[in-house]
Image (cartoon, rainbow, N blue to C red):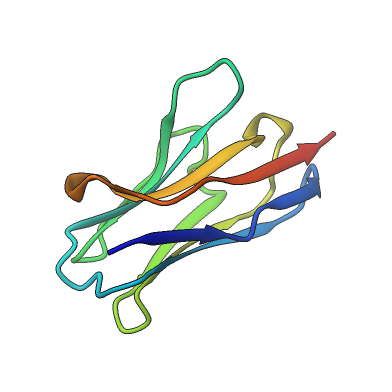
Amino acid sequence: VQLQASGGGLVQAGGSLRLSCAASGSIFSINVMAWFRQAPGKQRELVASITRANITYYPDSVKGRFTIARDNAKNTADLQMNNLKPEDTAVYYCAAPLERLWGQGTQVTVSS
C-alpha cells in the first residue's frame, strides 16, 4: 500500500484547508491512520490519529480545530483543518505508522 497526500496550500490565518490521504490499496486492516507535520528546524510531530474503531486523538495544539476522518470504503484518511494559525505552517505527512507507511509531504503555509 502506498499513501498519497494532497490538499496543501497557502491560506490566511483563520482560514481552512482539507488534506486528503489516498491509499493505493485497502486501509481496512490498518489499525491506525495518522497525520504528522514537520516545521523547519523542528521535529516531526503527530497532529491527529484515528483507529479502525474511529477513536481519534489530537494534541492540545490542534484540538478543537483539526478533525481526522477515515473512509475504509474509499481508502482515504482526510484531515480537516479550521481556524488555521501561522504556527500550523509545516509539511504535513499522512502515515500508517504501525505499518511504517508514509506518504510524501504536502506543504501548508498559513500567513498572518
